[in-house]
Amino acid sequence: MSSNIDPTREELLWMYSHMVLSRRYERMMDRVYMEGKTPVFDMAKGPVPGEMHLSDGQEPCAVGVCVHLNDDDYAVGSHRPHHVAIAKGVDLDAMTAEIFGRTTGLSRGRGGHMHLYDQAKNFACSGIVGQGIGIGVGHALAIKMKGGSQVSVAWVGEGGANQGIFHEAMNLAGLWKLPYILVIEDNHWSVSVSKDRSTAVARNSDRAAGYGAVGEYVDKNDVWGVYAAAKRAVDRARAGEGPTIIEIQTHRLVGHFVGDPEVYISREQKQALTDPIVIMRDRLVAEGHMTEGDAERIEEEVAQRLGVAEEFARSSSEPQPADILESALH
Image (cartoon, rainbow, N blue to C red; front, side, top):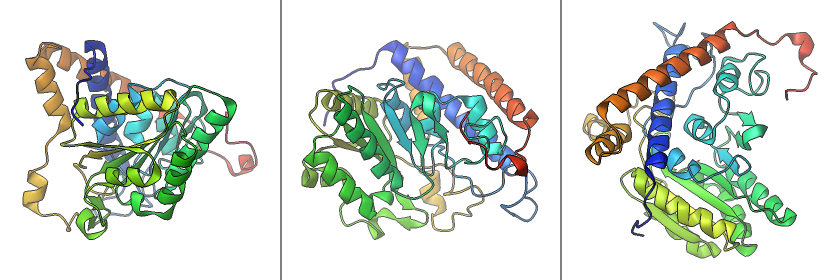
């Protein structure tokens, strides 16, 4: 669909600043995660052990949707969740502490980076590929049963759209006209398997017709296109007109996980990737929405904010075995 829905200057600056915050957050987490994991990579070492999935390059998929959401709307991220959590307004200090496994974290350090949960912002995510789809539909059903005006949005990769839960959940959402939006982040790679080797259709948004839903496709990782598609989808959901699948052609600028050697992607493919933050910054400056000085100020403010979040996490205490039976909720 063509976009004739334009964001305000305030919305543009909000989206841009949150894209910068998300990207710088991921760069910080990449640095922290690699502590103690060299010269021989060992994911069990360092202050943040385990696997780490970063969202560099996929920021438009989060800000272009969350700009339309309220605190009481539901958002369910995937195993690559940080950009969505940041755009939904999840507490940055508590989120960072959770990833560090500290008691001041969102779930007292027991969930980790793929199982973030913030009740105040109605945000959650799952490390199981595709499972957020069903959780999001469950939220949408609860909204309709209670007669609420909220919407429920779930994010999944194009590989997750091939899971069985996709079909079951979308069928229910379409049958019952639930206020549900499924955002498919098509970064072309399901770990190391390309989309053309894993998916029978060129566009997952075309599948919406099979469930009585609306399908929207956004090309070229376009923030403006995501904004417009999400605005239409949110308006339809709040009006009781049923679900939407929004598929966004995006890309990850880093590997599937930190430490991924990316042997499955060629150098030429990697070099062809574009940075949506650079593209948005240049356009905002060219159109007079902000100056280069504004961009520098945003970078400085983000750096200061992230310094506070990292210090908060590092200075927080680790969970004790004796506390294992206490509730993980604050």
